[in-house]
Image (cartoon, rainbow, N blue to C red; front, side, top):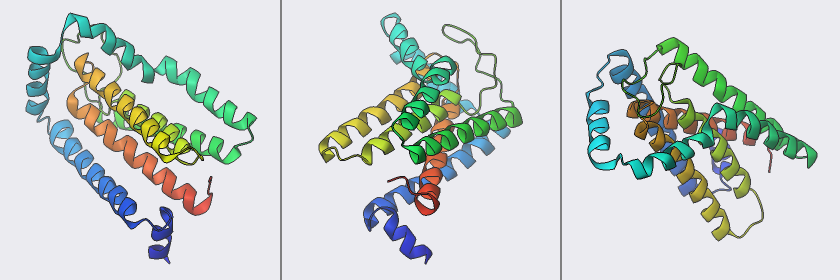
Length: 221
């Protein structure tokens, strides 16, 4: 029964299923390693090596403004406006199941982020580039929620009747945007690289589980 459902999960496309499950396993593994080694054991040498690389080869005055602008696409202010707006639009078009998915994925993601930040209470990196953040550092809320939000948009686009080429273009753009947001958090030195990678892993895992659960018990397509 379970094996048959897994096959149906991607319309009997075993390659896509195996790739998605493989990424889920990798995401859980990487998140566990980061949590244990870098957050709990405070082995953050790799983080500071990456910071040094950024300072030497990437950080430029001409790029800083762009990075600051990009990071706003997953800021608390942006999410407070855009996420409820998306839910309202879905409700207006009577896409109730998609609206419920968006609400559950978003609220659940926020609770995960807040719970983990409070539990691990990891301090922010020293010497931020432009401004100081007051909340805890792990995991990166921008990276986690950005992946959930833009991943949700990509998933909804994939469920449409658009030609596949446009679906792929939209999905690549949205995933690239979420990755760039995470990159900007390291660039601005408001998060350790491990915070961002952990956030990506958490966001992907949560979104995958939400898609899996809804397709099994409350299909939206």
